[in-house]
Amino acid sequence: MVDGFGKRFEEQGTERSRFHGLLNESQALLASVCFSDYFPNSMGYWFDKFSGFLTRLEKNFQEFDNFYQEIIDEHLDPNRVKPEQEDIIDVLLQLWKDREFKVDLTLDHIKGVLMVNFFT
Image 1 (cartoon, rainbow, N blue to C red):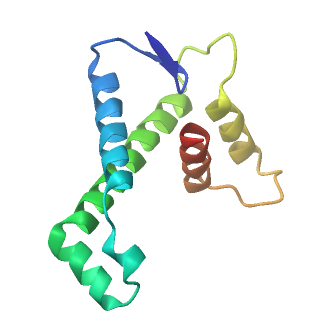
Image 2: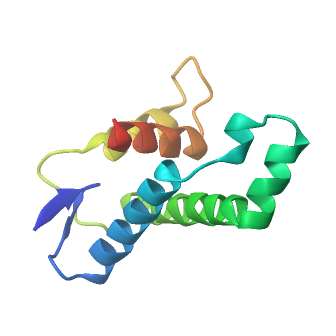
């Protein structure tokens, strides 16, 4: 079992498979050639567009965004069984609810922190 985001992912569970699929696609995208990196003018963009790279990149981003939104929604569920220890999502959501933070924290900020926290 793997613990993450305040929940357990069973070895063959669908959530774990989904998460690993997202990670595998992210790694494949990171290892792919992005022509826009080498040709920052419109030529690089068109190579990426025609190769399908931009479509894959956008799809992966949307799937991660949906994944993180589902996890946030689970943490916001008032019927959720409260764990013994809070995780990072609980702490960030408490800051979001309190609105005492100097920055107007949004759910997109929380998703960004989760992404950075996970990939570093």
